[in-house]
Image (cartoon, rainbow, N blue to C red; front, side, top):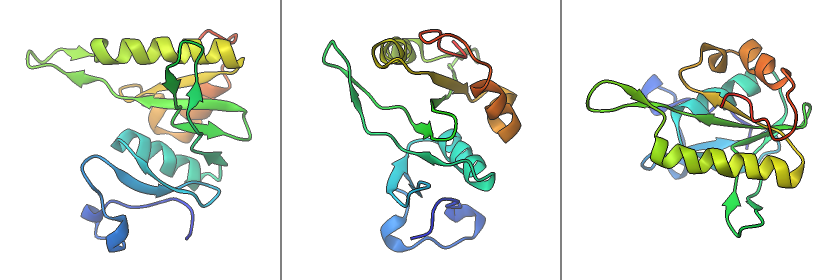
Length: 154
C-alpha cells in the first residue's frame, strides 16, 4: 500500500472497508509502509504535513522504562533523529482550557524519563500552538535545540 495521506471519509475520499475508522482510531501508513492507527485528528494532521513535505518518519515501537512502564512516542523523524508527540488540550464544562492534568501529567513525566533513560529528545506538539499546524512550525520546534531531558513545549 502507498504511504500516508489518508483523507477522512467525510471529505469524500473512499477508504477500503478494512481501513475504515473505528472509534478514535484513524488508519494510516508511515513512510516505510507500515499500517497502524492514529489516535487523534492532531496526529493525523501532523502525519499528513510530514508526508506532504517528504519528511521521513515512522511509528516507533514502545520503549520499556526502568520503572516498568512503557512509553511509545507517536512519531520518530529519521532525518532529525527526534521523536515528536502531538498532544491536545481540552475545554472543561466551565469553558476553561485544561491540559488534561490528571492524564497528561503522567505522560509528561514518562516523556522526561524516556528522554533521560534513552538519551534522546521528544518534542511535544500542543494542538493549540499554531506552530504545530504547519511544517515550518514543526521544524522550528524540533530544531530549537534544548538539552536532553528538557522536553520542548512543557
